[in-house]
Amino acid sequence: MVSRSDIAETHVARVTQQHVDARRDAILRSAARLFARKGISGATMQEIANEADLSAGAIYRYYSSKEELLRAVFEDATTRNEQLFQDIAEKATSPLDALAQIGRWVWVEQDDRDDLVCQIQMALKAAQDPEDLGVDLTQTREAMRGMLEALIRQAQNAGEIDRGIDARHLAVILQTTTMGVQMMKLDHPTGLDVESIFELFVQMVGGLGPQTGENERRG
Image 1 (tube, rainbow, N blue to C red):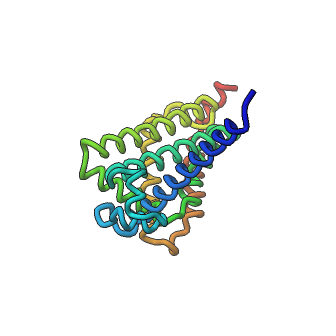
Image 2: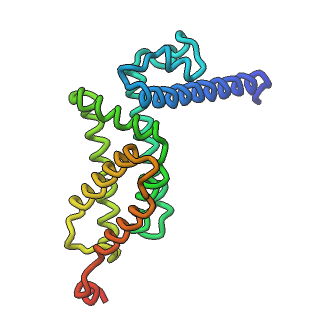
Image 3: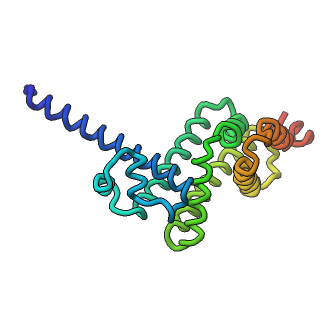
């Protein structure tokens, strides 16, 4: 039989873990904002602690250094993006619909300026540190490219995209075009009609469907 004291201890442990998780999340969000606004080298642990409503000493109980915190911000962003990709792909009505929905989220709906700038800051840091963070960023981009390629191959198998198109090359085009649009959104925060540009891009990708002869062979 479970005693009341056991239940109380379990409840305290759960609340404590929830508190720790909430603190970590607040620190990660605060660090991302400060990295975007002041740069990775310009943001201090004291400033990040202040942004997260923590004392300078308290933040070190969660992250021992700014380098460890930077890596945590990077890993958190990677995990969230991969999970979102998978969630959209699972709910989509077709592989091509999944590509369109993922594109819409990245091109149109992802409009947090601090988040975009933080991504660029981390990319610059990775370029300056190719043996450490640079390796992780390369692996992350390759993994994302692999997921895009898998969706493209599924679309080809479903007759939505011509089988003659190199799926890997198309995945690279989709990825690099998306990265370029994100940069343009920062340069033109209000003067860029991202919605219309995205719709045109969807039409272009949709135009990569199988040629008439291939459709006839399928039929």
